[in-house]
Length: 81
Image (cartoon, rainbow, N blue to C red; front, side, top):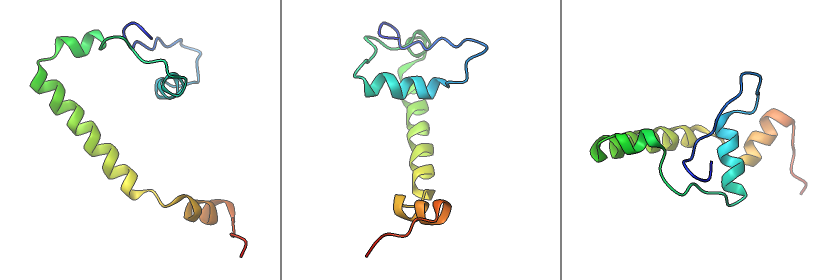
C-alpha cells in the first residue's frame, strides 16, 4: 500500500478496501505515489472524477443525523440532564 496505494483483496476477506484505507490512514501510512490507474488518466478527467466523489460524499454526509440523534433513534440513548 505504501508504494502505490494498492489494496489487494483476497476472495475470503470480509474487511473491505475502504476499511483498509481508513486503517492505513489512521496509522499514518500514506502512499508514496498515486495508483497506476490514476496516473493513466488525463488530469482533467482525474480532477472531474475526484470532484464527483467529493460531491457524492458531501451529499451523503448531509443526510446523516447528528451523532446524539442517531444514538437516540437507533440505540434508545437518552442524555442525562
